[in-house]
Amino acid sequence: MYKIFFYPLFLLLVGMILFTYGDSRIIIAGIAIFLVGMVFMDDGFKLFSGGVLESILEKSTNTLPKAIGTGFAVTSVVQSSSLITVIVISFVGAGLMSLSSAIGVVFGANIGTTATAWIVSAFGVKIDIAHFAMPMLIFGVIFRFNGRKSYQGLGNILIGLGFIFLGIDYMKNGFDGLKAGLDLSQYRMGGLAGGVLFVMIGVVATVIIQSSSATVAIIITALASGQIGYINGLELAIGANIGTTITAIMGAMTSNANGKRLAAAHLIFNVVTGVVAMVLLYQLAHIVDALAHDIGIAEQDYGMKLALFHTVFNILGVVIVAPFTSKLVTFLEGRFQKEEDDIDRAKFLDDVVITIPDAALVALKKEVIHLYENSTEGFAHALSIHRHKFYGHHDIPEVIKTSTEKIDTNIDELYEKKIKILYGDIIHFTVRAELHLTEEITQTKAYKLKNASKNIVEALKSVKEIQKNIALYSKSKNEYLQGEYNFIRSEIAKTLDMIYMLQNNNDDMEAITKLAVLKEDIKRLDTIHNGRIDHLIRENKIDTKMATSIINDSSYAYDIIKRLIRVATVLWIADEKVQEMGELI
Image (tube, rainbow, N blue to C red; front, top):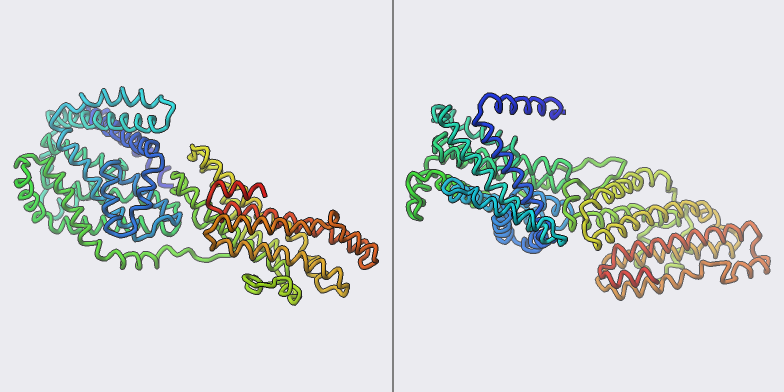
């Protein structure tokens, strides 16, 4: 709702500034060009890395120090803490990364993103950076139209860098021009009130611009032109650091509980770091002066000093907060607990995960497994038996034979509460995810998972069709009719038991062999082909009505088991080639 009221007001305010202050147009155009460059950089690294970026984040974060180092290194290269944070939120939501590791990556990303300040202060305000922007834009466009995705990604990166450099140049020229007509330095403020005000300006600017890197670039260019004072510039940088958490919070709004916890950790870290930096502002400024002297930064080079300050206070924040990571995780795990209700919804699917192909597939697979686990109650109870009675039992037919008590499970109610909405979430997510799954292999995996969810639902509908007859005829006084229905129950139960064992089996070839044996065994359900029903009719052991029921229900059972075998092949056989073998059996 807030967008309906504030967005038009924001546009009106920008328009008034553009027409009131001529030089402000150049600054605002510079900010816009800079942000376009960041978007191209984000998209470029996604295409160029081909999943390498995600792989590094997934595999190099098993300890907190490694997670911090990885977050720092990757963000220093990518120059977008927002991109890294969004990827990490998606990984946590999909279960690819622990919350502790994800928090470590966010810590490191906060340090890594300070590289933007170094680039802007070292080059952007000292040399004609636009001179380098043009070749980057030209070669970027050439690469962008190449057929290979890696070249397209490289093209986007070059275009992004070109726009970033061009945007910095526009901002620098705009502030130089603005100084002649309007000197903002006269509004410099000291004391606590001034410090809080400039921190809040930094927060608001970053929330509006949605990029702390852009805010820091503005601060440095304004500082270089003398538009703001050095201490006020430091305060603005602290505010920008806090404001950048809004991107993560907005990204986590539609995420699951773990995504929200990570966004909360990001906020806590940046606020704690900001508060400490404000309390120790002048002490840190003296430390920065001393370090600047030692590494050769000129005394009046306030842009480079601000970049150094930005790095120092983020490192200080990591040093202060990192030792309490385990306690922070414990605290956050007690938050954002979803209240249980009657309707089961997706646990792993959200709008953050959907943008990262690897994470989207993992989340989708976990959700289909969730759907299967919800449905197993219906499969077992429709057979008039509880799962714990036959899971892992060596003689399932005997267990079935002695289990005759009817279990009152309403399949329709189960479907409405635990299957229908969840299945809809899976289909809706898959259709939207296909827009981000550009590789054929990922599209195929998504299709198989979507089809697996359909097979689960169809199998549950089929078991509903035989539930009534199973409850009636498995206790029949006619031992032959009872025997046929106990056989149907046994075959479905054996299938569920086999899948239960497959969930903890890491040997794909052994799994596919067991499924092949099971598929061969269920051919006995083809009652017409094997002649068993003909024999029972000729011997007057069952009547016509009984025969029809057995034939129909055996057909339903055969369909149920075939569908469940297909589901098991997709969900619990990892190797693609072995999986294809399973589809042929």
